[in-house]
Image 1 (cartoon, rainbow, N blue to C red):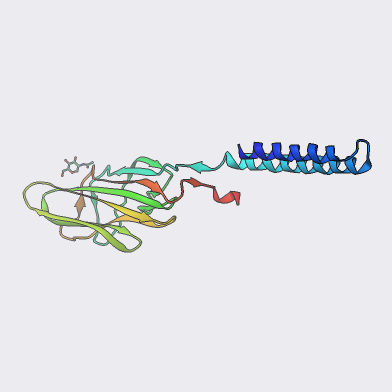
Image 2: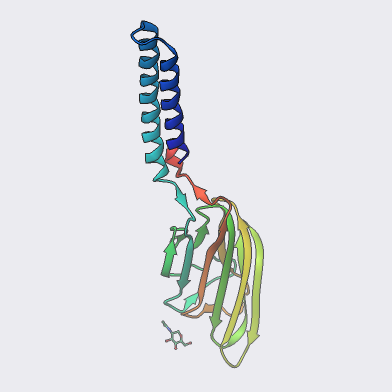
Length: 197
Ligand SMILES: *[C@@H]1O[C@H](CO)[C@@H](O)[C@H](O)[C@H]1NC(C)=O
C-alpha cells in the first residue's frame, strides 16, 4: 500500500515539475528523463522488496510432542531421549541428543509426564541451559507411579530444554511417558530468515 502511494507521489512530482517548464525545452526533457530513470530504479527496488516480503515468516509455528516406545533404563544425570516423535513443527527437538532447541525466541509452555513401574523412588528434572526449572519425584512400592508437571519458560533463540533423570533407585521410565512443548508467543511476530539480510 505504502509503495503504491510512493510511486503515485513520484509520478505526480514528475508531471508537475515537467509542467512548470516550457514544452520542448531541453531542461524539461532532462527533468523527465531523470525522473523516468529514478522511477525505474524505484520499481526495481520495489520488486526486490516484494520478493523478500514473501519469505518473511509471521506467527512461526513451533511445537513438539514426544513419547517413549520402549521401557527405558536410564542412569542418574542422564538425558532422557524420547524415541518416538509424534509432532515436531519447527524441528526444535533432536532425538539424537534429547535436546529441544528454541528455533525462535519467545514464551514457551513445556510439559512432562513420566510413568515408572512399582519400585523405589523416581525423579526427574526439566532443565533449561543447566538450570532446573521443574522437578518431579515420587515413591511407590506397590503400583506404578505417574508424575506430571508443566512450566512456562522464556527462551532466547538457540536455548535448550531437556529432561534429566535424577533419582537413582528406580531406573526405569515406562513406555508412553511423554515430553512436549509449544511456543505460546514469539518475541517477534514476524521473522526474516537469516539468509536474507
Ligand atoms: C513395559 O513394561 C511393562 C511392564 O512394566 C509391560 O507391560 C510393557 O509391555 C512394556 N512395554 C514395552 C514396550 O516393552
